[in-house]
Image (cartoon, rainbow over all chains, first blue to last red; front, side, top):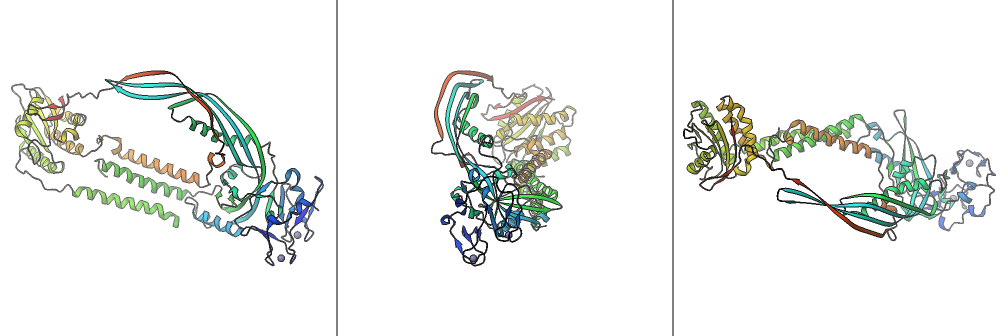
Amino acid sequence: MPVIDYKCPNCGSSMMFDSATGALSCPSCGRQDNIEQLPDPLKKQVFTENEVQQYHCPSCGADIVTEPETSATTCSFCGSAVVLGDRLVGDLAPDTVIPFAISKAQAEEAFRKWCRNGLLTPAGFMSADRIKSMTGIYVPFWLYELHNLVEVYGKATRVRSYTQGDYQYTETQHYDVYRKLRLDYVNLPLDASEKMNDELMDKLEPFPYEQLKEFKTPYLAGYIAEKYSYDDEQLVPRAKEKTQPYIDSSVSQSLSGYSSVSYTDKQVDTTVRRADYALLPVWLVNYDFKQKNYMFAMNGQTGKVVGKPPLSKGKITAWFAGITAAALLGMKFISWALGGDFL
Amino acid sequence: MRSYRIPLFMMAMVLLLGLALPMVTHTAAAATSAAESKKLIYDQANLLRPQEEEALTRLARQYAPERQTDFIIYTTNNPEGRDVVKMTEDLYDRKAFGYNQPYGNAVILTMDMYNREIYLAGFGKAEQELNDSRLDKIRNKITPDLAVGNYGIAFEKYIQLSYDYMGYKFGTTPDNLLFQFWFQLLVAAAIGGIIVWIMAYRSGGVITVSRATYEDSSVSGVLDSYDNYTHTTVSKRKIEKSSSSGGGGGTSSGGHSHSGSRGSF
Ligand SMILES: [Zn+2]
Ligand SMILES: [Zn+2]
């Protein structure tokens, strides 16, 4: 039986994760169970891999239609929260999870507020009344701990300028420089879902890591969860790519004080110390505007919204004209202060 | 429509301020003119008709209080062939020009009709506010009129330009790009374009994490380094002296220093 559901021991209703209390709660009788003390039903089960082709809802018996990546969903017939246990064990068992802190209602309100604050978005979009769907998804991430040993060799100069008599002298001191740095990054997140847009997920950061919890399936009750499409080794190149600018900035900071630096040799030795499989909370908003579909994502803990909204040509023009007029006034004021005519 | 209000409001403010500010600045110009009878134009070479001389005197008197400066015109046939700079200095020493005080602020234009030379000099605070390079600019602008004998027009321009240039601060002159409308508009449009571009760029959300977010600062840092000095190179460049073609200023025998610009017409 790979499908797990959460029946209320009091009344038999399907229990859901409550983002306000962080407990598994029953919408019918109000029972609240502390998840951290709850025995995870997943731990007691043994599955043989790829055994199951079809899932059935434990409550109503209907077929559960899912995509191959989905590991938690709700039954489309009776609405019970169901977790597909065989997609969360073995290599697919998450290490940690950050539960949702923002409920669907709060997420919707936060999204509407964000739409209203769009300075360049069309008026019709700001009313935010065309939300097609609002889905709470636990997105699979790898949290890397990367240890870097960086060695750079280079030539640096310090330039001094002074005048003597009728001549301006420029004195350049040349140095051979070397830096060896240790740069360790912890909990560097990279989204491991093929479906999710990488750029969008990067902008959702930071996730509050103090909310990281040991993974237990009841956190998923009532939400969609996905399993990773890329394993921890496949994403190492992207992790290195992500830390590249961090390393570059640390190196150049260690060489500040020089007028110019050119590297003759630069070596970065990266060791992946660990990669934790974590599920992080994201609200996905599908929005319909003028027959076009827009996708937005919201950090399920911080409420940060990302995604490209439509832009209004009229508002862009109005802002451009307004700022240009204000800047022109500023220029006029400067010219007047310097003795020029105002008009 | 609510969202259109902010930029429209800004434009309305700009228009209002644009109308109000020049009025404020020009009320100061209506100050009293002192020394009504003071002689400012010494037309010994008889280059001007009486009406022209009258008009120029009126203009010089009108501007004098605002700049606290005497605007002097001196023309001479110079039969002894004296030096134009010396004549200017001697005139200042002899007449003790200066608005409301002897040996005060004055700008003098001297026309030497014998050598066909012109000299512009700034005394007092005009030595700074009308320095050599500014006087050069003024002289270059009036020389074409002098060359064809339009003395009245040239002298009027001289008073007008001297007055204007004394109002410009921090070494700017009216020729500065900063005072050209097309340049002001270009800069303003560039500012508007950049800000709106940033607004559009940020509308989709921006990355708010940096290397500090994920760096383990307890162990990260520089482990080893060296900075070995190898050698020094020196290059030198001759400093360009700002050359004043007209000869520049000096000090009169009476001990009064001044700026100046000399040229022929
Ligand atoms: Zn119950
Ligand atoms: Zn069901």
